[in-house]
Amino acid sequence: MILVTGGAGYIGSHFVYDMIERGNEVLVVDNLDRGHLEAVHPDAKFEECDILDFESLKNVLQNYNIESIVHFAAFAYVGESVEDPKMYYTNNVVGSLNLLKAAVFKKISKFVFSSTCSVYGNPITVPISEAESTKPINPYAQSKLMIENMLRDFNTAYGLKYVALRYFNAAGADVMGRIGESHDPEPHLIPIVLQATLGKREKVYVFGNDYDTKDGTCIRDYIHIQDLADAHARALEYLESNDSDIFNLGTGDGNSVLELINAAEKITGEKINIEITGRRAGDPAVLVADNKKAKDVLGWVPKHNLNSIIESAYKWHADPKF
Ligand code: UDP
Image (cartoon, rainbow, N blue to C red; front, side):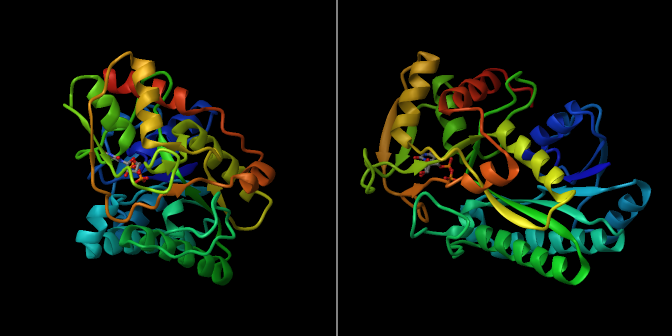
């Protein structure tokens, strides 16, 4: 059985759907602080448990036959992490330490970790490969890098094998519209743009058009959530017979904020009102993945593009189930 922490959250819930559809048994552990019970696949086992509570976590692990762990549970808002770093270091780092201790205690030796391209900070070389140095510029990214470092040391000392997956911009939704992205407040561009097309927002604020990019707006590498799910499945398989490693997960293509808004207008047939405002603190101009390593080593090939990302997200936002 696979233990999935944060399996009621955005990325975790899509991974759980994928794994169950591939015939796996899954146990979701989530404290439902930011996750949604409705997002948990009906065939998954579910335990409401906070990974900060080490005794409860150990009890849960005693009651199931867990072979591997996929760890999504974390806070993931950059701005919030700057305002309240103690909350981020506690929830993300201490919570993960508990989980790693519990894994060692239960002799679980396969661990897939949900990391982020923000560990690279402002990269020197774009597209960004795994060889880029890590220089986090906010507590959220720092907390994720600290967890990667704990994993490295637990691997050396206790033989806990891991794969850390550094995602670029996770986006889109289940193509069947069963689950999707539901954050409150919503900081991410694609949901905000689609809410504007659906009359749920008056306009979209574009955070800066004076970057050194083709149209002056920031460029990001949007990667479909089901492509991410597939990479996690491959990472688990990889750990069966390989040592620990780190992979970037992105499409290798970048889109600017204005390109994304234009694509959403075309797909939805709605005009989007925009207002150009100042830059958002901490936004690098361009974040695009060099995904060669994940392709070569994991055999991972992203199937979606910006249009199918927007189409699936639109399906969800037009009829959100939670
Ligand atoms: N963005 C924007 N307006 C918004 C939200 C985001 O212009 O209301 C921009 C943001 O500055 C960044 C890009 O859209 O360049 C993607 O932002 P998001 O928060 O979705 O992801 P991030 O890249 O911060 O992880």
